[in-house]
Length: 577
Ligand SMILES: Nc1nc2c(ncn2[C@@H]2O[C@H](COP(=O)(O)OP(=O)(O)OP(=O)(O)O)[C@@H](O)[C@H]2O)c(=O)[nH]1
Ligand SMILES: [Mg+2]
Image (cartoon, rainbow, N blue to C red; front, side, top):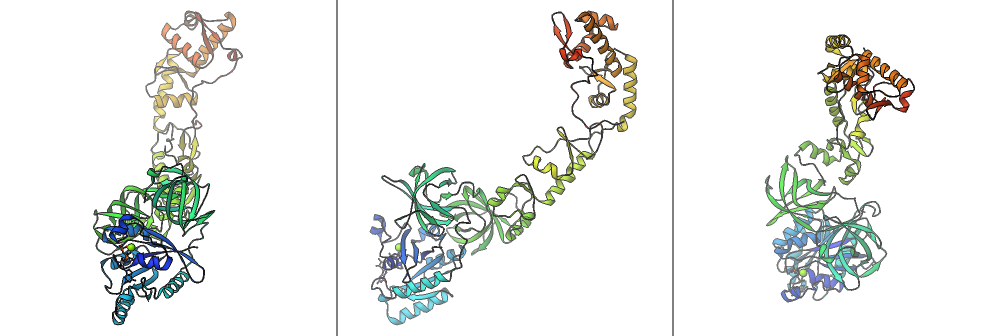
């Protein structure tokens, strides 16, 4: 895996000169940089080692106003090259850059005590001594960019530091992610974005998303240090020519990522590393990737915080952020790149251990889980959803409580309306009948309304063909399912027996005469006009008859004598007495 080395150090301490001495490339290309003699933008150059290995060098500005640029250059680097002026020794940005490197997790590198030609031997020795104390564990090399002393030793020291780097994630495992640090357009090529490839690989023909804006771009070609390559791998400095995006719709801070592989988020849950106390609610600038975003800190417990960002970022678990407000305040390790808004200390502690079963309290899509860098182990999974057992248990408890309180006449409840409902219902041990959930095997029952039902049935029997008001619709529906009555609209009902009698009369008459009128039907049954009317309407609704001219005729399928049940009875649990 190719490695990237980033310079660090106070303004004017000789970083750019050293890069030029090592690589032959002057990275201060801007006219303003040339005029002012300081670096403003990030510079890039390939560095050949004596054993043939090649590293990428990123040169950062030292000016305190450009710390933000320094952070953008330093994220994604593997090794540092801290440059200290032998005559001046460590100065404010020497310390600040070192702190930023530590916050970004860049622990290995080399210190160059430069401008050795400009000081006497004793001063040089003191400067080297001071550098050793400042960065224990790093090799310190005295060099001069001006006369070229110490450059081979410096290259060798960088080579040793590179060899000591633990091998990172295999490039083909992780999804493509690159944070853009420069954008320009070239005639004949179009939009070009450069950056360090954090993970994955990129090659011509790839389709990437420009986040956080969610644009789609196709890779036309890829270069690594001005040389065309078929594919570039994680860790490399790359320049990608893109089609489908204008130069103006891309900027530093954007991410080029494999579609769908990283969550776009306005919140990051982090474990904090504080250089100075960071107050709850304070406003900071969050540096992540090559972007810097204003944010508010919501502290969670002693060591954690949720960063509430003004603009979305795409991040992954394990990313580092730097928090600044005027100066560098501290940093954070991303535990959850797309957390819920709640401040939950237990969740954060669990996120630290990567244990999804205690992080995930609500149903999540498995894909979202992967985006948050959490494994689904320990979770219950169904149809692309993941649920914690605790959550499932409490959902089941809640539903059971509601079922217990349901009307015994129809002891079901509607299932949850959420997207995960279909996945979760089979896990709950409940029965789905029609549109409702029931306790397994439960049957509708009259319960305390037994007496009420008896009285109603008696009244209906007494009324014969005269429709009777049944104000309790639940009870009426139950009794209809049980076969005791037939509802005929307007909150009216007749006994099942009366309904069958009327039906029989109607079928007989139609079979004999071909049709039946309202008057004839009324006379045959010996009832008044209104009840005759509602009964006929019910027969129409049941599909027995249809209107024809002044009267009604039997529908074809009704001409065969059948014991047709009322047609509009909803699906329901089996009725039981
Ligand atoms: N004598 C001597 N002077 C040097 C050497 N390296 C750099 N300088 C001087 O230091 C000045 C600044 O060097 P740069 O390399 O531009 O410094 P820098 O660290 O890149 O500065 P910023 O990018 O603005 O932070 C140069 O213009 C030189 O005058 C060296 O090895 N010897
Ligand atoms: Mg410079």
